Length: 417
Image (cartoon, rainbow, N blue to C red; front, side, top):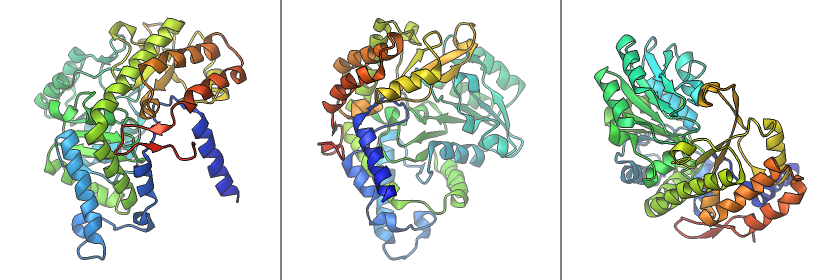
C-alpha cells in the first residue's frame, strides 16, 4: 500500500537523520502511544464542564484535570486553554480574545523575528486590530526600552506582545511589564519555542514577571504532541480565551490532551535536568561552531541562553545550497532565514542558519557530542566536502543515541534496534 510505504520511508528517514531543527523534538513512546489510544476514535465537543452526563465523560474530564494540575505545577497557574492545535492558533486566541477591533497591539518587528501570526498579516490584522512595532535594538537582540516607553506614551496600546521565533536570550520582562501596565495594556508572551524551557525552569516565566498570558507550542522545547496552549494568570482572562475557543475549537482531539498530559508529567519529574542540558548543549554547540570558524550570532553575550544557535552563513554560501548539503548528509534543519541589516551591525541583509538542540538532547547527547556536530557542519559548509563522504560520520553519531531520555521510563525510538 502506497500510504504505508510512504509512512515507513518517513520513519526510516527520521531514524537515520541528525535532527537539528529547532522546531522539532522527540516524543516519548509512552506519550506517542496515547495518540493512538481509543481517545482518538472521537471527541467530546466543547469544554469539560459542558459534557454533562455523556457516557465516558468522567474519565475524559479527569484527563483534562490532570493536565491542568500539571500546568499549575509547571507554570504556577491552572488557568489554561489546552485545545489549540498549534502555537500560532494559541496566539490567535490570545490576541483576539483580549482585544477589540480598532485596538492597538505592539509586537516585536518581523525583521527581528517577531512571528507573523501576531502581525498585521496574521490574526490581529485580519481581526481589524492595529498592529505597531516595539522599538528594537538589533545589536542588543532585544527591545529598546526607552523607545518602547515613548511609543506607549504616544500611542496607547491595549496589548503588548513579546517573544520571538529565533530567541537567543530572555527579554527584560519585568521592565516591559511595568511599562505596559502603567499604560493600561495587557501583556502576552509568545513562548512558542521556549515553553518547555520555561516549564523546566531554564528560561524565565513571563507570568511571574507580570504577563497576563503565555502561549506556546507543545512540540518544540516541550517534547509533546503537536499543538498549542494559552496559559493565563487569572480565571477571567482564561474565560475570555476559552469562550473564543468554544467557537474556534469546539471539536478537538482528546487523545492529544492525554499525550500532552503525559509529557507534562515527564516535565515535572525530568524537566529541570532536561532543559538545562538543552541549554548547555546549545552553548557547547555554539562554542564548537565558533572554534571551527563559523560566525556565530550572540558571541558577545555567550552565544545563547536557549535551545537555539544562530549562524551567519551570508559569506559561506547560498542558503539553498546549505540546506541541500546538510540534507545530503542526513541532517534535518530549518531553512535559513533572511537576517536584516539591523541585526548585522548595519551591514547588508544576510542569512542566518538556525540550529536547535532539543531533539538531540532528548536522545541523550550532551556537551561532549557537540564539538563533533560542529566538525560535521564545518566539513559540509566550510570545507565543502561531498555530503556522501560525511554521512557516515552522521550515521555513527546518530546510531549511538537511540533511546529517549528524560521520560517516565526510558524507551527505544520506534523502528530503531
